[in-house]
Image (cartoon, rainbow, N blue to C red; front, side, top):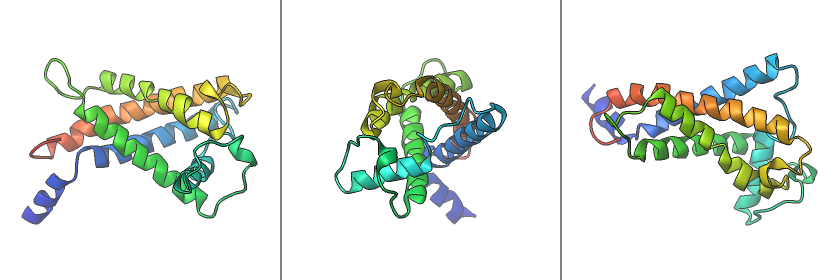
Length: 175
């Protein structure tokens, strides 16, 4: 039991909270897709596309004309999931390092705002490098992808707001 406690102290709160916040995002996006009658789905985004982009990054290629026109990469789906969850962990840990007002604790509203703000990253970094342009304007689906990002990143932030305090209470030492 004591060994488990010492090991748990070594894992930053952002790791389990980030995994669960990213899972919250994924579940919200699947639910929105299922119940949104097509308003929340697009072939322009998904683990396979993210994995294809990440595989290109590993080979030194940052930008693509339209990544959907690129040949599929071996293992791209798994690489996309890994990249997505690693990003969620890093963004969660970054949120936990931000200075806070009042009691210094994470709260649901602040975390949700942060999650929604993280939607700027794909709009300004990922999508332009996939060949979709700034704010996905060259994709032909800017409004649809905007809705998807809003739902997903709000759920991500809510996940941070719910899970980070849970894991922080079980931890002794720095976040």
